[in-house]
Image (cartoon, rainbow, N blue to C red; front, side, top):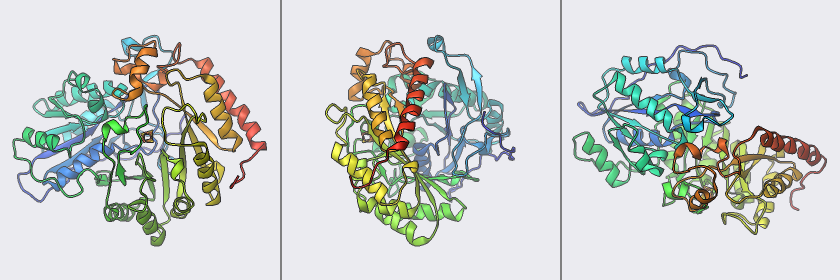
Length: 470
Ligand code: SF4
């Protein structure tokens, strides 16, 4: 059981004022997570914070209601680790009817419903428009609850649903009860015009660098902050949503990223989490100037990269700069050690070995690294997973199994539809906790098997270690 923290006084939802009188008021809501498991890995609703930032610069008053953050909560919150991540409070719920056979506890994660309702009641003035964001497709029951809550408290409010689920499952999202649904990023001209149309105003020019900056100032007592230097990814892995969500790979201007880090540091933030899908691509353009700024500033930050880094771009220079700047959480995207039959083209055997070697040469220890291994893809054999775990542990590095979630619109989704035992047209079945493309689905015995195998191989791996430069 997670340790509980001393209760903090809840903070109200607060308007960030525009200096234009009579401007629209936009409230962003990050809804609850409804799932079998959830853990806060430096989690922020980055897309929503991006929307609020560009709307504020376009002259709107903005506010945030993050139902997954402890600032609004009036109940004890599970202890947050010194680096900023940790458990969420949860309430057990009956499983959705479709998932009634799943042998796991279903829960709502985040702040209590009554407290959320009170925070909305206390909000003055009331918003002209409410933006509800979405992330995982199978979390949509949390969106339904958020919409129902807004309807109870603010029946006249216009609710606009956007975000990842709304973009990937647009037709499904239309049925959730929002007044409007937008697909794709808000800075896209048609979406920008649509939002202003809802507000009954002509759309102003998009602010400079729109879509590349997140307004994290809505968090008044932040344990951590986020850094985004780019949107999208130039790779097109068949299982990943990034190319669908951001067809172009765009990079921010380093001066904007540095200004954000300075502002957050000034508020006492020391832990920063990179949210990029492709942090190490074209590093000379943004990442290197940002890392050089951090190194030169003497800020002493802890940097985290829980999104997998591209191992092929772990050059001696990038590894050295990342180490000097304070990267302490390093997650690597291997997926499989089978380099001849992959569902992507992001890594070769030689690049893999060289990248790990460069990390170790730069001073990272194997304990600081973890390697993501993709499990449960359509047609994948257990032997492939086992060999990949063995390969990681033979280097003394911890593998982390990431169970595959079928994502609509990705090339692998049609194969998933063919091979899964479940009706994947229904987003609840995309949940990777269910192992939707594994014959028979999730089982506790198999879960135990993978854990025991990891422990067994880890014992063996400790006796062998990977020498840099081999
Ligand atoms: S490299 Fe990573 S982020 Fe890019 S498409 Fe592949 S899985 Fe997605």
